Length: 84
Image (tube, rainbow, N blue to C red; front, top):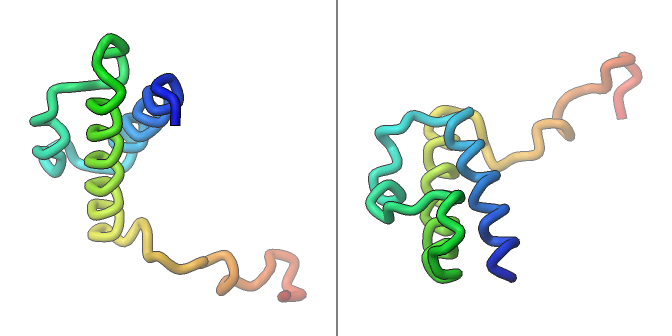
């Protein structure tokens, strides 16, 4: 993955963090002291941030029941009442 792609992914993950999770749960990511606007930082630094942030987001979302790991759409009947 190219550096600009990592920075873009980092930006998207930061948006998810702001939308779905509490700030207190991201101590490991915060300790890296990097955010997507730090384009001058190395590719490796952004890769570490993306890996850390994605793991912590997954943990937080699963704790709060916002991500169950199942395909809930497959379990829900169709809106028109006819089913699958």
